[in-house]
Image (tube, rainbow, N blue to C red; front, side, top):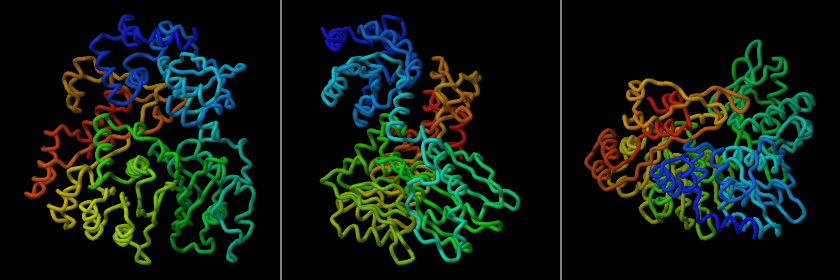
Length: 575
């Protein structure tokens, strides 16, 4: 009898039942976890570990004993990238398993849930190898799997100075001819070329969103924004300021002789055959020279999938439900840097199928989406959001995305499109969902047009995610937790609050970011309030009655689940 056949027979006993028998969780809590995992579209093991319900080590030991599958500590394993490449990225991401080694016709697969027989069958079919499962701890698996997939694609975590020829990196965007007004050695100086390329590679490796090159009177500073926080990374000699800015401007097709006015450009850095990163470059003249900021645009961020964004299960369901509607308007709101673009692009990726015509007007298009018709607005030549939207409506669209609703003309055309059989996605800069409706009224939009067109509003923020390796429980008095907004029943049931510590795997106790969302559908009751001239406070009260979480409530739930700290939630949700 094969291992998979043995697992199939043992699966009748059930991992949930075995975990209860081992005293790791009581029956009612396990029933809630099973339901929660189903609602979140996660396997049970990932659900239990991600919410710190049961330690991954205990689950792995129990599963290995129950199903008679070998147990392995991934800390003792050196991942073989050639073995990882035997299985497609699509299957690795879908089933969250890790190929460990190949022995003859046998492929050993690390997984945390041995009952994932469908995944093993798919891998067996795609590789034509006999698949042997090995049980590992869920948290270690996800960490090593993410790193291995990135390394296999010449990706972010493995980038280093030794991996690339820093003088001859594949960077496009620059002209072959250097502008006559610039000195050739300014842009061809090998140390400068290496320095700029290394700064860019390091920023990609760290997951930075922006790079700042800043000249001052006696210093020159380079900073990177990682998880929303700017950190100084280099202090090159101030004498090199003009050479560094000239190099970057040539790479991004800017006029290096023009130092008096702001300029915008782009750079494409190819890391491998299948992976490239775009940089949006902005130069601005300051009193001590040109400050240059690069925005890093990683196309893979638009491919994360909705599960990676941090929506609560009921919020995700609302978003997906409204994306499936043939018409209506979905608005995403929040300050700059709150992740609105990723939320919209994730929705567009879900809608991007062969039978759907999608057009977007952006300022500018940050990430290229194959299959989507993207337009950069250019007010200088009359190509405004409104003009682009009018053109879209003459091109048989199904879905239209407007980068931002800035004026009454754009708002009216977008709402009219939403009323006439099109799905419209757009953004506004407001603090929360109720204020978005009143902002449209303040713009001059008729209340009845809002009530009959807008179907969903998503307000969002980004909070830094606590590092799973070093986060530590905090002792906070119950009275303080009540003042922060936690429920008494949470405190009475022994809720644990975690805070940052700091280790070699993170920055100041945080690694990555998680979304905090308010997802408000426009119901009949809210529509009536708008028609009657109600304000944002009245709309917010009605939304709460209908079960809509405000940003504060959603943030506290992230703290309750150990994903972020109370300090972080306070910094992004308290106005």
